[in-house]
Length: 404
Image 1 (cartoon, rainbow, N blue to C red):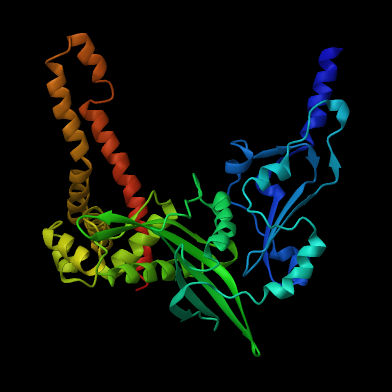
Image 2: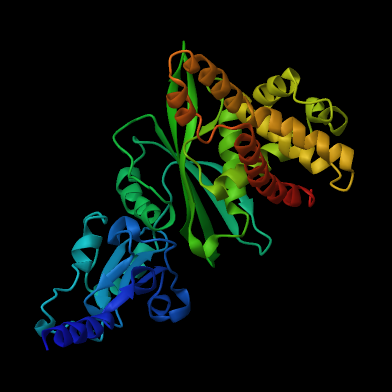
């Protein structure tokens, strides 16, 4: 009988479980109408950084966790609603949803939705902070502006505290940065909206970059985080923002080269596209030079004109050669594969040399155990897998380059 009761409790408990990605509802709004409209809501890509690896919330039926922001100032509202809470007789407490969210949100947020909506009209007076370094129009006639700020920029620290909360839901392994460090630079992208004599601004995205020291008196900027807000994604804003960041540091005589910290797959693809788009115009990367293999001239010109470091310059070469190679030409395609695999094989060659040295100090049995996974056949299989993975990445960039 006890087993039956326990099973019944488990079945009852299941209806109080919900995917935290589905439970969360985000909005970027400027009016009461947008707050109440269902179509303005969007979902996170992930929530494990707040609600654990299972991305599950227990204890509520038909739960909705509401995290609303003013689209410009990022004034925040946090609330939740649900149809029913898990009964006490199940003896399983509901998850502490709001306390888990509050840990990630800076003070000053609203917990009353009516109060949040009353404050929206005044928040529409928000203006961007920092120095405007670029502006551009979109195809629909909208205007966009990019601002550069740092720790000394008025209003920036408080604004960034609100802004960086978004990375928890859209950048894996995200962590908040030390905003007190004056080596951070912030690139903020806003949409400018003109309605009669009234001008309002809405946040579209942002990027942070850290300026590392480079001997003797230079800097080595490293892009750390980039996020385009979900309502503005797939519209070319990420590419435009990265282009302007690159231009900013290319024109800075103190910057040695431009690096990226632990980039996501999407960012890698974006960076590859922009770097290839510019390098394909350089003499060293001309189509006629690609079949001759990677050269020092490519490395030199990429660094001198685009501040691209040598590892990325080699990748640009491989993508552009892939782009120029006819896949139905067996000889050309074979030569390309061999060229890339030769680079990929370098770590395996080192491993083979290390194993040869190790053999002198191990018994036959110990050496055989150490060689597991290191046979020639296994190495060839891993090379093939690595090449296929790269080819998939390169093909996406090459397809985009066709439009140029």
